[in-house]
Length: 134
View: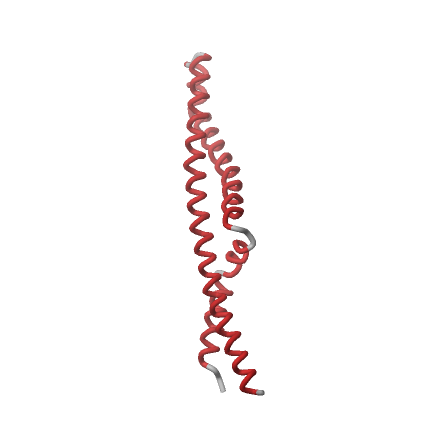
């Protein structure tokens, strides 16, 4: 005889395992603070690379104009402005990373809690069945 409740629980667990379990298992390896700082570290390097590429493209487009028509003081002020823009860019980028990582971590923990609830229900069903057999 098929236990419909057990099948429902197994189905919920199978759907979770197939769709979301791998990302949640990676997230579950960390404490929240560690996970967020890992994401911030990764985004620091990717943000720096992205800003560097944007600066390179801008330099290629305006490079000749800057060198020909600018004095040394203007180049120094342009460099100062670029550093300030980099700091502002990275601050916004890091803030967005922290928010996104916090939300991702919270959702992952929520899904893991639901999975554990299904697992406990299934375990209780098996225990009840074992007691009835004896």
